[in-house]
Image 1 (cartoon, rainbow, N blue to C red):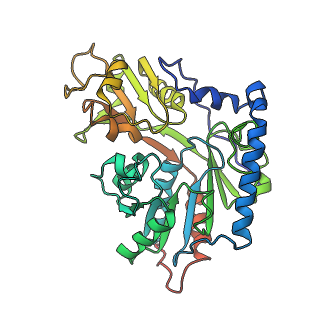
Image 2: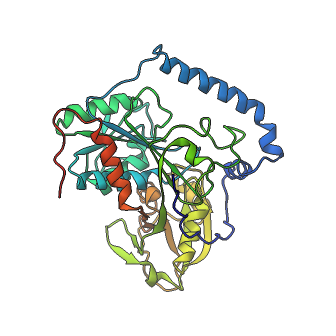
Image 3: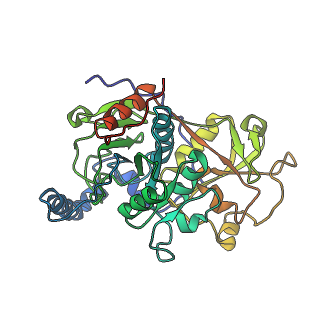
Length: 375
């Protein structure tokens, strides 16, 4: 298999004013240093438990739910963010162009399952605390049915019952969720690849590598031993949109913010990448706050400690006023406290052959009445 060259690298980001404690672990995952070595005994226990779990499903002692329509999972084999949600949105659009009628299912990581353990239909106006920030973003951007539940099989059943015209399920995350049978597996890698090649917590891997895959997408260099997976592979280019979006839906060109002091905030797995992309757009970061992934962002006192006041004052005003920028994933949580913030969408570019290949794989598992392929 010939692996295409990686996309251009992103410039390094400046030091942030605050950095989550988890950053020390993710840094350690990139090398086989003292901290990673110290965590190896726990890594062996994690690997043993994972092997036992896979064996239970492989032998049939644990049963997986098989949906009546094809299922494609977009996930990763590493812990932390790899850009799964933008890829899910890209895949949904690609499948729609091929005549499929997709729905998206998710566990809704970070949401409060205790409020409603059953499946929930995600709408553009849903509360992110109840459905999760990523499913809400998918519902807003895609327009397709989106369902979340503590068990992905429950979300799948609810989506198919409410929308009988759906003929393919796209699972956002869940590559290791063996209780849901799948037909196509897509793994997404960030620029860190497989890190030091060790399993959690000594390294970033959630399962042994290499493992079989149908498709691999990577934002940096191709992961080591990728050819051994048998996957069709394409580079993934990630970049910020040239505009930011306000709570009122208005677009503000990033070019108009050049020369203005910017306070950047990101509660994602690798916030430094967001800051670097802002700099690549020519923005001046007066302050950057890297927060834990899926941070709630709904505590006024906590935000005030970061210099963010709960206010409805317009962001685009006096030239010396700092502009608060966040990721699109964080926006709907942050807007509850700071409605003046602006969100910058993340866009992905993938070779069109990716969508065509996913379509071809899914058609091998389609039911008797396949979708009509568009010309």
